[in-house]
Image 1 (cartoon, rainbow, N blue to C red):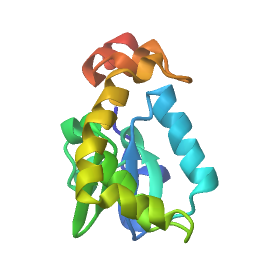
Image 2: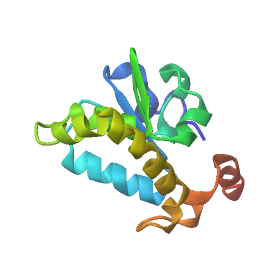
Image 3: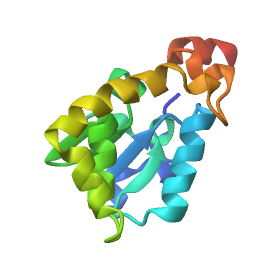
Image 4: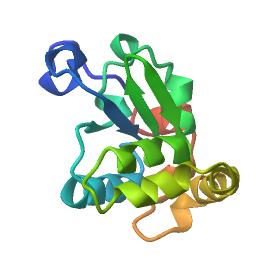
Length: 143
């Protein structure tokens, strides 16, 4: 469910800069985002896509459901490419990891690994059964 326009966490126009979107209904994704917020200083706001104003960001819900996203006015990346941008824009010691992840042979391998993890995130530490459900089914569970 999208946040209301009056929710301060959802107003993207208030704070310039990039946004890193993740699945806030998935415990595994939320734990990964918590790690990013604690350990990886970045200019991006790390937000669950469910709290973001997707329309203002120009993001379709299906895009946000499919993979993590790096969104800024002139750049959009998904999955491991989004993670690579985030790392390249973080503290100096994270930049090499983002650079390596951006290399063509590595990025080709990163996508299948990302998809494997995404398909099995409900089995990973911190994952829950809800992590394996599409958003439409999660919404029905909450009714």
